[in-house]
Image 1 (cartoon, rainbow, N blue to C red):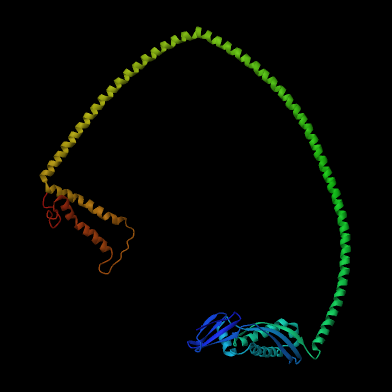
Image 2 (cartoon, rainbow, N blue to C red):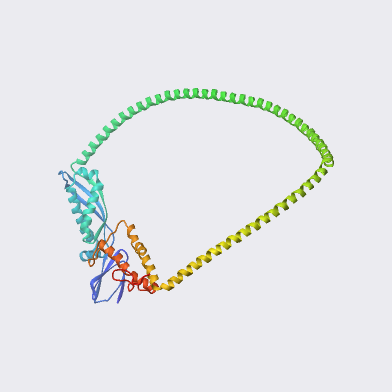
Length: 431
């Protein structure tokens, strides 16, 4: 087993025993079994092609010669393109590969020249280069070759056609130059007039600005004069105000002196009042205290009198209350005796009396049972299909309740009122 390596600018193709399909390694290493396996190399270098197309008739029948520069190489990163290149160029030299690619590019270049005019090729070289690159790339890709770049290098002819185009272009440029010079002179004159106008306008504007500055000066001077006069007036008023404040303080001091004098007079008056109060106390208050004591004793006697009268009245009310309580007691005893007599009567009649009472109350019971129906304003009835629906259904329910009354009475009292009635509804036992 032999170990082989290759650089990044070439690829190895190993075929033979256990190598179906062949193994392709671009810029790597591989083990090869001698005698049973074969290794071949293919170059991945970039090839520069000088694509010349001599005297090709363009679309308008003008023969020209074009030279283009193309950069091509076998693509080693794409396995499919590398396999196609191995099938077509394995065992061939770089010159042979370059010749095949050059013939292909030249054929496409001639075909595109035949479909374009001289003016289109001459004026828009980028478009011509792009078309050649696009058409040639699609063909060379099938061979495993990629077009790296294509540039149009030179265009020339033997009929002096391009020179004529140049002369026409030169004449056009000269004409444009003369027109441009005339336009430039015209624009210069316009600019000069505009400059003169701008100068005059600037002069007028300058004079206007000077007038504005003079006006602003006068206005500011008037403002400053007004401010000075105002400050002067404020100063005069402040002086007068200060004089008034000084006079006011003098008056306040005078008032304070008067207040002190008045306070001293009030103090003397208070002392005089105190003296007179003591004199009055000695002459009037003591006799008044004696009179107050006498009046208090009289008031105490009057209070004791009123208490005695109130106690007497309360005793009278208590006696009246006892009399009323006795009357209530007597009335209660009478009611109790009446109830006892009624109980004795019920005990004597026993079941017949109870039945009689129940029969008296039955109409009231029936009235209470049917009373809710009188409050109903609207009734909705839904039938399930197996029973009757209508007013008869409602009255039937009421009658059903009434039929259950004897059973209910029997459960509550133990008396069967149905057995104590005749078929015509009259009781068997007379009360």
